[in-house]
Length: 206
Length: 156
Image (cartoon, rainbow over all chains, first blue to last red; front, top):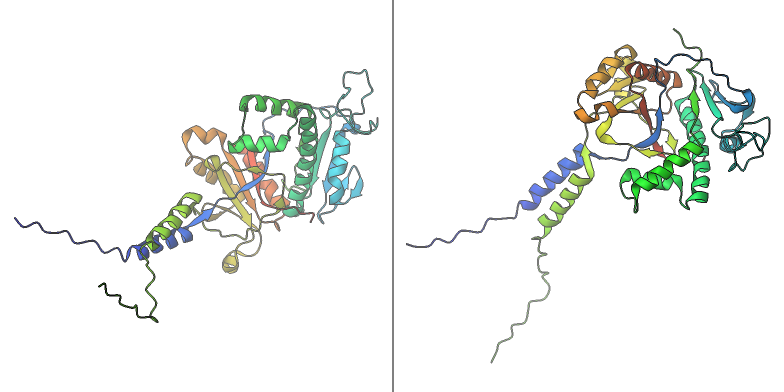
């Protein structure tokens, strides 16, 4: 029996086929890069409780329809908002010896401003005609204020940045004991809770 | 004696393209791995606002809501006021709950109660529309939301 030699397959068109596939994938896919500011909405069925909040513990940020800021009834530039929020949260106005005394606050300890970070509430009010751009910018600055304080405290207690470790855990590349780090993150969150309340936009037609 | 034939100078030898398929396949696999299939085409303008205090979005447990002015080619039939897009079509605020429930059912069952709503809203939209969306989400008890932003800061 004569042994036939198998002819070699011509691979010349392989490159064309591969290019075709490549171009197909380039066109139909997108590179994922989504990230953003996460928030939790208040549940709707909550019984409306009359909570007595002292005026000094309230930091009211109001954005009007022309994207102008009004903070505690004084107008303010967006670039000053972060510092103002930090000063408010970090104030620690409760006198030493009382239950509300904040031992880690580095603020001015002004008795007319917030007692401690746990009591400090930032209330955000916006108009229906506020632009989304401004709305996000304000939220970003307020979250930045909280993050800055949390970083400061975690740096003091554990020697790392709160935001860095939180991101590393979320992406799954934190080196070290994840559970321990998560516990410490929770502790920081307890020290400086993010109390950002959003009022429903005014002039809402119902 | 060995005979040395002098190479004819002038004509360049052809470059071998034998490794070209390998290179292209490598590129192909790279793109297949780092990208995902586009699932819906945008019907609205979508320039995201800038923010830097961000968290990563977990894609497997999120549903997307787009909002903004209709894109240029849809302006004639839909006007220029901001609209909400879910999936491949425009949705009204009244219809939002139904559309979202439908979307949620497409997620993996174990992730359905951890659902996160990703809001991709154009920066020129009014906050009122976003407020309406949030109100509907509260009624649906989908409380975790994330405002998708682009990197940067509005201040500089």
